[in-house]
Amino acid sequence: MNTELLFAHLVSIFHSSAMVALGKLKNPATDKIERNLEQAKQAIDMLEMLRVKTNGQLTDNEKRMLDASLTDLRLNYVDENKKELSGNN
Image 1 (cartoon, rainbow, N blue to C red):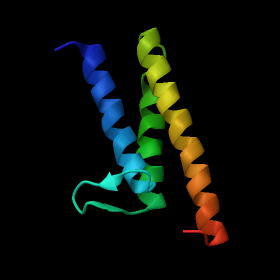
Image 2 (image 1 turned 60 degrees about the vertical axis):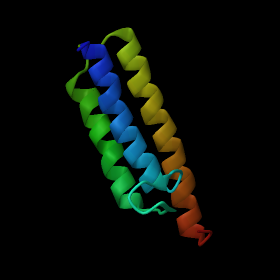
Image 3 (image 1 turned 30 degrees about the vertical axis):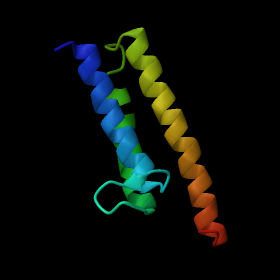
């Protein structure tokens, strides 16, 4: 299988996991919207670790995809964290 496709799939898995933990997508196991910011942070941290460990080894497309995913997740994390801190669940 194409390594760029495998990399995209890996990033997608962590991105989806984080979005579920942020309460942006339904949890497929429970069919409910649930929020677990600690779990979301862990998925974001895993993608960041992947970015650091693969620095200089990614294609331009892989780098753009990973950077876009991290940006999207970080912005959503900040948004959900603000809601939690203000009590607006």
